[in-house]
Length: 79
Image (tube, rainbow, N blue to C red):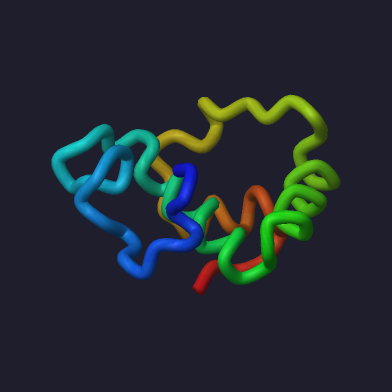
């Protein structure tokens, strides 16, 4: 996901964003990048830490829609 926050194309055809890629993590990747774009990296990290703590159980994020990820990690509705 490194560099994805600066890219204009989201979701794209690369890596975890790819339609043919691993569907389990697609929502987590898209939701996370959207949140960073909207909040900025520092505020995103603070939101996740305050809601989830230092250890995030990422298996809970598998197969979720991007909007669900935004709500889970940042406590707000996704856009």
